[in-house]
Image 1 (cartoon, rainbow over the protein chains, first blue to last red):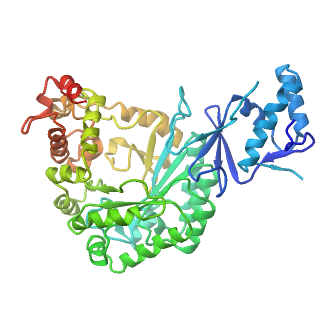
Image 2: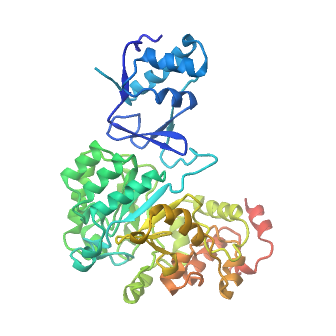
Image 3: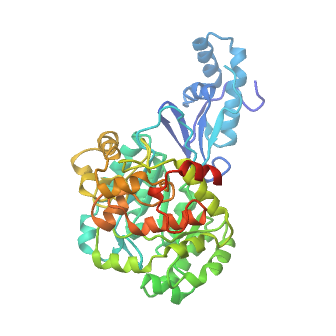
Length: 101
Length: 389
């Protein structure tokens, strides 16, 4: 697991973004300045990211997200840890998710 | 399940998010008001700022917010707030915030004169995700106000632009080639190049649209101010032959004549426009009654999924249109469209001589036609466009 992502932490979408689902794509729209690198960009997620994103809702620990995905994909949890940590790191850098207290 | 770059950027204007199925609506143009604080000699829209009759008929903020909700539900990504002068409305900020909270990018077309510190701060803190587009009518007070016919408007514009700069709000400037401003193009371009975020030359309004509300007296004035074909070509070539090369490419890509098809400008799942009174149109310039949908009596979904596709399929049976526009290979250059026919002639398919003349001058400059030749009479257009590529 990543040094930056703790399995016991809970993350939720930031209130500084708007998340939309349009024709099956998740589109993340910055609402305030300082989200992403440029002021005119929107963001979307790849297929892996989309599946993980749907579980980052402020109610599950990272460990629970991995466990649920492992059950759904019938894959070892160890294989999924890297993807979950990778997405969370990207989202944290872009300030699109926040850690819940 | 392994991925890298889980988060992908979609840059402004990129439309490849949905390779197979696009949402029913991707952009909505909203004319918040016909009213304007200026009275520009060439403008196709403005009514006086204090026009009570117009103001009383305008949709209120709640109606616009409900429409924005519907647009977002249809997948709309971008909304353009224009006018008239959209900042004239006291509820502009309320409508803007609602659009942004729905996850819409917002294009704002303004003359900047009514910008306030509070609004500039809002645009900084909650950015529109599109550069604010500011129309500039001159570099000096006397030229600017010869266009706007509004004393004090030059200082107000400078003040408004200063607020955008001070707050770091991205904006672009657009000029207009008019009798008062023709001599200032170099100065305008040099000034624009020094603005924050300047990239390339500013755009100009050259081919002024007539009023689509078909005001005969005003339209005669606008016609008299229009750039003629030779000057259009001259202005386009001021900085080299790049534009001429693009004209050739447009013709090569757009193929032969359009036959009886009237509309070629917007794809399915494209944009729609709404006037200040809640009437949906194919675009802001097209007000022919057969192409207008009253949103008060229907829904945005019905308008964009049923009404607009039927409009898009309309065809002409007009002999002049079929003989000329229907066979003309300059359709990639020509501004002829139902909106222009409507504004000029009150029909959907009457060829507009002004735009026809401009397109022919472009084609001569691009080596696609000989002087005096008519494009619709040409039978070897494929060879001409291929040869010149």
